[in-house]
Amino acid sequence: MTLSLFDSHSQTLRPFVPLVDGQVGIYLCGPTVQSAPHVGHLRSALVYDQLRRWLTAKGMQVTLVRNVTDIDDKVLQNAADTSEQWWALAYRFELEFNRAYGALGILPPTYEPRATGSIPEMIALIERLMSNGYAYQATDGSADVYFAASKWVAYGELTNQRPQDMAPDADADLRGKHDPQDFALWKAAKADEPASASWQTPWGAGRPGWHIECSAMSTKYLGSQFDIHGGGLDLRFPHHENELAQSRAA
Image (cartoon, rainbow, N blue to C red; front, side):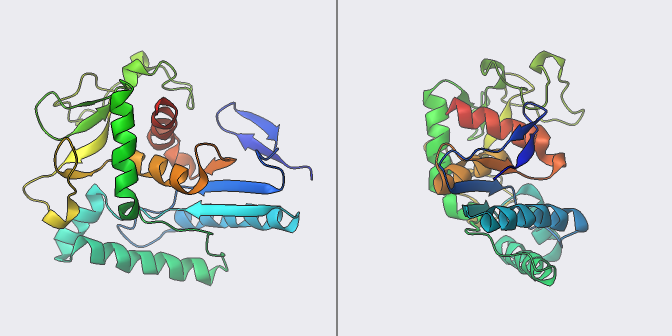
């Protein structure tokens, strides 16, 4: 089989050679189910459905994991706006996504884990990062935990950026951080958020940050090494950059 794929890390077209002969593991960053799907969501799912079908047709055993991010700032905010339970809103839109996938004939993934189903793995991953010296609890005494981007010398490698050249957003919350580039692994529970959106950890109650979710789910279902990590181009920074850094640091 001859197949070349564009590697966004090296910015080159590379021949695809699976880690294990005859098997392919793919992790695809799926939707954050905060609202109805749009054409961009469906295009991403369709592209990886085509890739999976091609690999399967060529005799490969393909494991495709496409996650559902069902806990997130916008999920909580939209649920508050509609007076719904956050998990009910997330599931309502998850069903909408599935109907849209079905309308286009996109096959279901091998596994479709929800972020809330891998909280123990996220906590364990954060604990390992803290033990390795690449994560720290917020200096303001809250249960926020941050990845120390300045300590990971390869940070920015995926998008060819240097941390010293990155500027924080004008509205970025810098409380409790060592450096502006440090990103949240865990978010402390807030008084105005529902208790059901909070989990207990050694550093306090709260919920996961966006990036740690995918690192935990991809390794849970595919192991510490797998063949293809994909998603929309809009996710390269910060999501995929942060995923890459924290996964390797762990």
